[in-house]
Length: 429
Image (tube, rainbow, N blue to C red; front, top):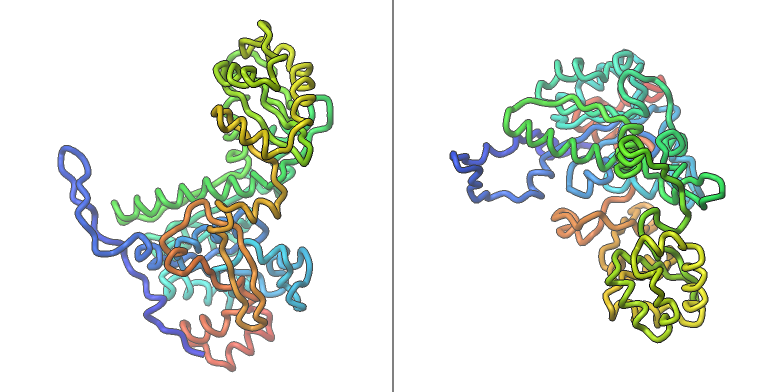
């Protein structure tokens, strides 16, 4: 039941780099970036997608991730999708972004739960605490920044919420897509607004929070101080509207959703072929001249199409004329021709095709369940971290509900078996 105490001991980061008046001069370091990240412990009161995806990214850096869940309700995403393991709370949807973590259950509303929580912060040497609870629950559950700072002065605290720390409005990704304007810009011009194919408010907020955490870690190394970080999913989502907001507010433009075409460039769209679809993106007049120099497209070499503005003005007729040509060829034929004249083009691949793409196949991750032998394939990281390289691109299998209660509560906190059983009966863990 024991755990190696040294494995959970908190290690401080290295001293500051040498600085001279001309700027930073980094002395050689004996330890690697992977070593530094492996010294960091993250305790995350998480559920759904936005925070689990963030801690999944941190796990790919090699950080020790411990996810915390309510002992009765748990993470609702555990119950979404198929029961691929034939057991409760390990459904397929949960498996996608929870590899590389340990899992505890704890009722923070119970006095005994609060006592255990405080011990976890101190004795695990938690570097980062993160939560996507509603802000009204921070102080009630004893997870607010001031309470945790009193336990560990240099802790980095992160709260992810729908609309910021002053709002208790619950938010799901599609609601944020709707309110942020992302949905208004997605879909056919004369059709209904559409949700995006991936949950950008969830994933985008995770990436923004990832960057803030990296800055907070650097700040702690420089000053020795922790940080209190509040991240709004709504603000994160709106931040992607860089062009629409400036053109609308400053220049009085009206930005519409345009389906597969582009607001400012043409031809940019989906075009059918004999065996699928390609996406062609012409970004300048030189590329257009290269296209109409091809025999198959010479009929489109017209004065009114020589400039991008003329092509935009007649984009519907232009696209119909291009479609009439592309339908006569296979996708690979067109891709080869367009690439030969340096015009951006790509096949619209299905998910199975993406998985088999040589550039994707070599960076896929995997995890194996030691209990059942089940192996799952995981999406590749944004970049291959030193930790993933060293692990052969393998991560530990997503944890079962409360899987590490005995290891951490019993081993690290030295709670005896009788105490653990009593806590379990009272639903504290």
